[in-house]
Amino acid sequence: MFPILQIGPLAIQVPGLALLIGMWVGLSLAEKEAARLQMDADAVYRVAFVGLIVGLIGARLAYAARYLSSYAADPLSLFALNAATLAPSEGMLVGLAAAVLYGARRKLRLRTTLDALAPAFAVMAVAVALAHLSSGDAFGVAARLPWSIYLWDEYRHPSQVYELIAALGVLGVWWRQRGRSSFGGFSFLLVIALSAAARVFLEAFRGDSLVIAGGLRAAQVWGIAVLAACLGMMKRWNQEVTP
Amino acid sequence: MGWLMEDARRWRAFTSMIVLLAAGWTWFSRVPVSVADAGRIPSPREGFPAPDFTLDTLDGAAATLSAYRGQVVIVNLWASWCGPCRAEMPAIQKVYAANRERGLAVLAVNGTFQDSEADARGFARTYGLTFPILFDQDGAVSRRYLLRALPSTFFVDRRGIIRSVVVGGPMSEAVLQSQIESLLQEAP
Image (cartoon, rainbow over all chains, first blue to last red; front, side):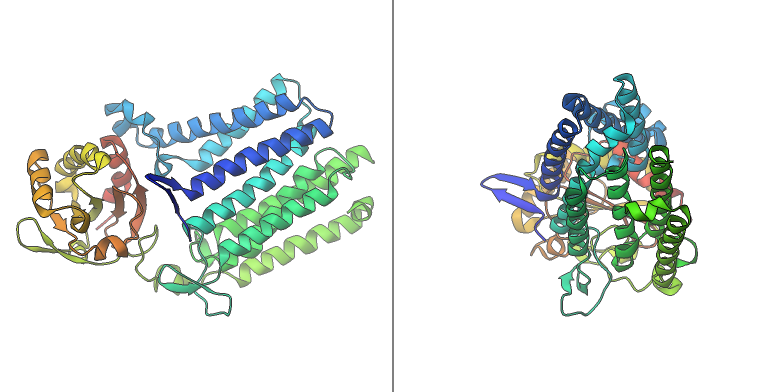
């Protein structure tokens, strides 16, 4: 694990750096893919950017809304940004809604836009895995295996490495199949479906899972729902092209 | 995948098989209830029991984290020379004063190995701090808590589990209050 990169007096948080680089590489790839799909690359870039910014603001406001009395007494605290004071799920929803609305206003074709953004999602998954690897978050369940890593006072599954390999695999599959999609939206659905399948499989090796009723891991249940939805939509969108 | 999608029945069979496999794996890999909340080793991470420690305090006594079981504890790692620590300490004092009766405790662990007792005492006097100031003379607690940046703050619930970690600062009163509010509402 390598959470801090010390360059002279400068201490750089490696997880944050990995996410920033991932965002930059992902958006650059999305721009190129948009151009390949004969779309307005700038417009696709802006859709992603609007989604990210509005998502971040939404996550902050949603968190503040949960503790309204605290923030009403000290509204300037809204500007004290810290990862612990964000509501990620709400932020994601708000960001997604903003991106969809912005895209509709710019008259962008939804499925082709999603295809253009597919590499950004795949690259971000790689960046998240690298961030986890450097910070030690998303750690594995305790296990004594020849490839176990010693982390947080225990030998564990190297879940961050598994996550990285899976994310690179998804990116590789996207790369190989691009240009061969039989219908608009296929690349996007493929990336999301493969990512969901990887999450369902790999979550079993995580030592920090959110556990719900019956000892089931919440991420796996969500993963199955997303996987099933993607497979259903693949069939439906394909039927619209080849009835 | 084209040949799969060409035939509706073939696609349905494929989809069903994938979803069933995923559901089976999810069921097979579920967490045994006995492991879901027990058997975790102390570690300075969210969801883990807070590593215990005993340190000398500013008034010459000793303070042990586990002795505060039943209370919500803010463990704040700080140093007198650290700007964000200076900026957030008045907010911690205010939140402590406002919530002490509700079961909030603050253990302010001074990294004395990279500071000095005299400076820490002066700091506590200047800011009128009324919660225990602990001296981490040899850095053992800072190492145990994998200190990456000052200040670092750990919010520990009444069962001794770390519920959130804030690395860096300064934290405002609102941020502090938002972090402890739900923990204070939990039954002792």
